[in-house]
Length: 247
Image (cartoon, rainbow, N blue to C red):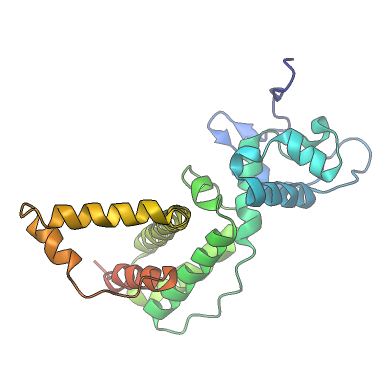
């Protein structure tokens, strides 16, 4: 084995199928190893350690070696809980999904309920900036994710949409929030470079004044709207949700 590289481990106990992670094996079996002596740590502790690493340093920092060091375990022992990083990401996503405050029973005002849910999603993703990137690939729904989905589907029942359309609306909402938060994080990073922001503003003003971009010129002279991250998110969210309807 080359020093500094993770050893490839063949998953055990049917953790992965030919199509990838087997959600039944991952979520419906015991989370503790079935063989050997009683472990000194749990899958929950391993997952929490991985989440803490990702929060502090990003997803690239999450390796089995780093997680093992954080919980004070040997690398090999972790593979009984998560045979590879992809499985660990599944655990991480579901772990943080359980942080969202319980959404009260639907009020009957599905638009207000859905907007509240979207704000909860945004807050969760801002606490864990790696989460939007982790959601770009297909993820299975663990117990926390399923509980959240159940609340969203219940909130959408008054729309008159059928079950498939409500699932689509949930996917659309999550994609919107994830994409917006990714942009929000990028913009926050760019805002730390005021010289560049000023240069970009001067550039757009020059382009708008050249007479070849009348639509842009009109847009730049329109009355300003609140530009705080919260206000911008709410404005975009309202446009999305107010456009949902039964088809």
